[in-house]
Amino acid sequence: MSLWQELEHQYFMQTFERVPLTIVRGQGARVWDEDGREYLDFLGGWAVDSLGHCHPVVTQAVTEQAHILIQASNQFYTIPQIRLAELLVQNSCLDKVFFCNSGAEANEGAVKLARRYGQRYLGGAYEVITTSGSFHGRTLAMVAATGQAKFQQPYLPLPTGFVNVEYNNVGAIKSATTEQTCAVMLEPVQGEGGVNLPDDSYLTAIRAWCEQKGILLILDEIQTGIGRTGTLFAYEQYGIEPDIMTLAKGLASGVPIGAILAKERVAVFAPGDHGSTFGGNPLACAAGYATVKFIIDNDIAGKAKTVGQYLINGLEEMKQKFQLITDVRGRGLLVAMEFGSDIAQSLVMACLARGLLVNRLKPNALRLMPPLIIGTEEVDEALGILDSALSSVIS
Ligand SMILES: *Cc1c(COP(=O)(O)O)cnc(C)c1O
Picture (spheres, protein in one colour):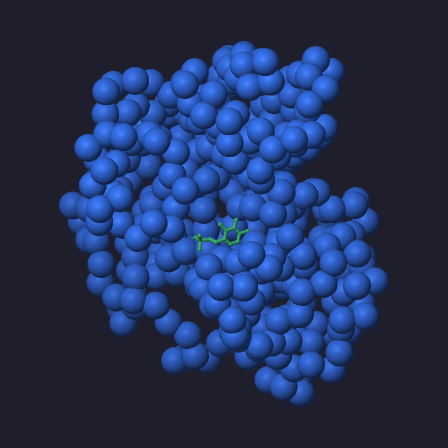
């Protein structure tokens, strides 16, 4: 263990199962440790570094903004947040934006907005239906929304008003809908819960059900949004539109930010209903604007789709070679590979030793979520390392 890692153990609450690597610098899809060793980054800050590390447009936007104005509060108008809001509205199906600082906070706000809508239009309905295997964040309410017992058990009792039902089961959502229901909240593709892709008809059926019942569809696109799955937003691929959408992770390519977007008729917050000290901060919004503008102008989502398919094809080939690989799945550059036994941790370490960073999704699965700007050479390099790491782990 290095000195920095010893100090971390001394001073830090031990909530993270960290891999023994101290990253001190990043550029594009590469990072370097304190000894100057280079790594290919297929983890991308947990699907956050959409344009890779220190992309010139992001670094320039942050640097320039840091000389102009860093924080002014939402008591006043500031320009970067207005520019980013306009860009998001012009390029999505939604009409109104609220900025905050993280994914969990965006989802909290989305649920507050849905409850406000419920008070106004649905006779006080307040319940939100979510699904098993979902992940919506770490605040108490979002732990209640998250359909995974391991995140809930340590913190009982949880806030009420959430009903977790089986994922990818339209009937389960229908039978959980009552007079108290104000919204259904889903990730278009479940990220943290396993890179779980729904059946083709699932989201359209849920959209139709929400329409029929007059309840809201909240899409948590915190992980799937901003080009990650091959379109700017994942909902575009399913031919549906959400009433509320949340964003965070890749929105500012590494600078902390979150956003709630809503249709005009759903944006029912009145002055004083919701707020944030840092939300819409000029520095974060300048980074967000630079990121989203670059992604749109250069069709980074389309490139992520092509390169993602190339990666999935390569992994499928590897699956022919290694019987231990039981599944390869994903959309764009959100990809998982699953194994017949619990080798994910050993694989993470074997990849690390060979200069590749990957995420342990489950004891028997890895997640790959590299920066969206990678090319096929980087994918070939990663595939080569994965192949060698797998060989070493199973021998
Ligand atoms: C990461 C994530 C969150 C939580 O985001 P934080 O910024 O960690 O609070 C919520 N929903 C989804 C789908 C996520 O992937």
